[in-house]
Image 1 (cartoon, rainbow, N blue to C red):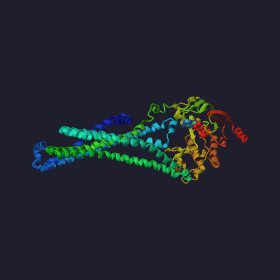
Image 2 (cartoon, rainbow, N blue to C red):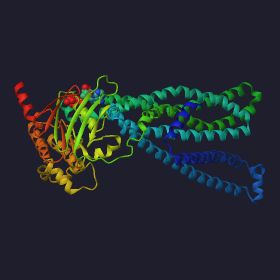
Image 3 (cartoon, rainbow, N blue to C red):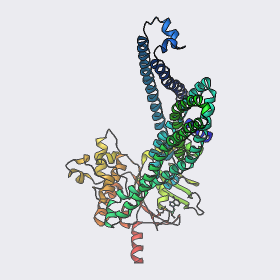
Image 4 (cartoon, rainbow, N blue to C red):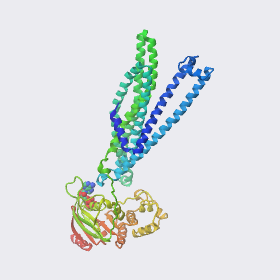
Length: 592
Ligand SMILES: Nc1ncnc2c1ncn2[C@@H]1O[C@H](COP(=O)(O)OP(=O)(O)OP(=O)(O)O)[C@@H](O)[C@H]1O
């Protein structure tokens, strides 16, 4: 009926199946075949029994039941009927247990594949190059990793199973009718086939549009609701909560309407097919009324037609609904296909090698450009940092400081030059070893809605007490934590909402220390802080200055750089000067 969407969905599902799952799918298909066959048989078995039961002496006269009745030695018809009723009951019992079991393993199978797809999506998005990753908002990421796989399982996989099992049912019924009365089949085909095709055509594009629109609206809703709750204080103070709320309600209003349309579209096929079937029956009736000579035959035909149509309708209807659903959820197949190219799927971490940092970290002639940017963001950077040194980076906004640190942290890779650790160029094969020894404290340190301890260890189940004590002390957090009734188990609220700015950053520092960081990057750690919190954070940084940790600090406040051995100045992606703290302070005083 529509080879396109069926083969497209099938090819898409195959992509996510492991070899054992592909074999399982073949088994499931065979089981579905048997259970569909049993469904048809169940319904078909009732009619002849009812017919012979309604007619006294019908059993002995029947060419099917008569021989059985006699060969099994039954004496009375009621006894034989009782026997038939028990048989039918047992058949229905077995059929329903069997089909429920097949349904159970089918939905388990789809759930298993569903989790495969979520795994696949997570792997894809977590391994995206950093700039691609940044192109996505959290709303779109949540949509693609959670909502879309769920919609795919419910809107593509399950309808596809339903489509195939109903096709089998329809084929079995058609075969039965063909053997019994081919003319009836012609009549049914004339009535049902055009109706089904027409209904599908009417609903196909509309359903696909609904799906596509929902796929646009849902990430937007996720994003607005994220802003609404994350920006709770700012939006409340600016009296702007209502604007976000209105935008969300408008968005969700459209989603609700589309959902309602889609529900309605699910109901329409039944009505359309029923209408056409009844028109068929009434037409034959009318014909019988106006041409009475042929009426006996025709009335019998009407009965047969109605019976057969009644039997076929639910299956044809479910086939149609499955097709319409597949169209509506076609967007999930397309969404899952994005970033499937080889460049995004190759092993992100090749064979890993160890790395030691004992002497120096060197930026050697390093240049970096963002994709599609004409001018390089970093140009010929040459810096040698000895282990244990504290190095500052200054420069106007946009001069490339954060980009340089992102290259150092390997979120970006240089196009020219290299980063050398004890003379060894940092390659993808050193990524694990390098990430083990490098720490990063951002201005907006990432904090989880969890305890202080979990935030410092990032959720380790076993905590190294000694390392924890050291990290807390070096980050100047011991007095603060000692004053809390719950100590390290104190919950800090979402994104650390129950902490001060200084405390948040010191937790970030403690985290880097707990991890036994050897190279610590502090990016603008103090620019957003008031004087008191800046003093607290600086105290922690100063403490670190007396350790063997190599520290690279990007700061807007010059006082943060007091303990630095050297300060590099960047301008338009190039290193333009090297300063000592005192010289820099003097220059600034002179300038003022
Ligand atoms: N993902 C990106 N794609 C394209 N250009 C980018 C991207 N990220 C940053 N840039 C550009 O690179 C340049 C350097 O940015 P960077 O963030 O490194 O500057 P910075 O010195 O850290 O500035 P600030 O002090 O304001 O944080 C800027 O012109 C910026 O617009």
